[in-house]
Length: 398
Ligand SMILES: [Ca+2]
Ligand SMILES: [Ca+2]
Ligand SMILES: [Ca+2]
Image (cartoon, rainbow, N blue to C red; front, side):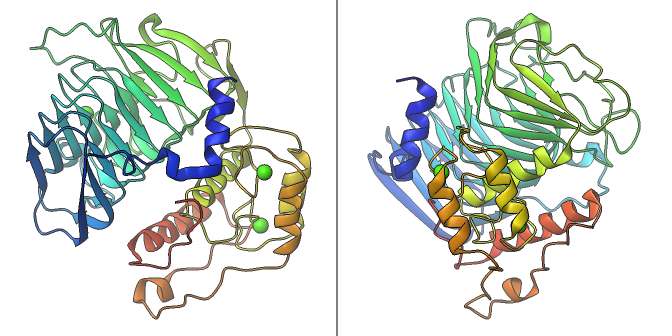
């Protein structure tokens, strides 16, 4: 059986994908943290269960792990507090998380929000895995390894970032990562123009890849890349420095003017239909328990209706983790998804069962007639509010 089918099969039991099950010890953190989490020399195989924990703007780096083998971070909300128009200089040195000399680390089911870099991976932290994780509002690089470590980014939604993936050595380092590989799999990534830019027009972005001739090889599969305009620096190519070593089933959603500015290698197809992105994001959010609790709301408009049936019908027979219409999240669009749709036809999200302020203040998702920008903004507020609820998150395959 192929790796891809095995992953799809594994979806039927998400707990198999959790590092908590195999940990040597689990440290559980809860509530809003009052200082950054900084640990050195944790016993091999330590997992931190931060499902009910959050970090908010405590320090430049909010989680720092050093000299710890097989470390795992599971869950949590990790965020800074930069204003929407903060200059790039103010935000770019902030990191949500740093890993030093910690090989085989797993970061899963975390939400990183509003940072300079999301995760920075330093020397000795080879073979990292980032999976089932949400990045929003990254002002610099979502995932960065200036020390050119290799790893896997899997089933992750990078909803908005200035630069996607960065592996460019600092001027003072001597690493050669050519023998390493980044595997990007089942991942959705959008370059969102930021007001604070490194240079060039504002709002602006860099590229999907900030790479180097000494950087790792790249494998990209079953992933979706969205760009809304030309870059200020780097470019929108997928074979940076000739490092693309394999690609299949990828989609590029291009919303800028004119033709896509770079040649697309084999394994990438182009669309200008923004709904391809929007629906895939909705599917990802629903599948990861971060949606509105309506698995059959394929277009994310807040109700289960005819349009969601059409998405199911159009994608009937398709397979993949982020295939729209897979309303029971088993990796295949088939008759069982129709049943999920039919049983919830006409449904709208349930009223919050608790009186939590964030839940009651959550705006209704914008109607389909809203502009993409309005809808994105409404979705962001909605995601943010969901992430801040202490409980009540739908228990969909978490
Ligand atoms: Ca950076
Ligand atoms: Ca719908
Ligand atoms: Ca299905």
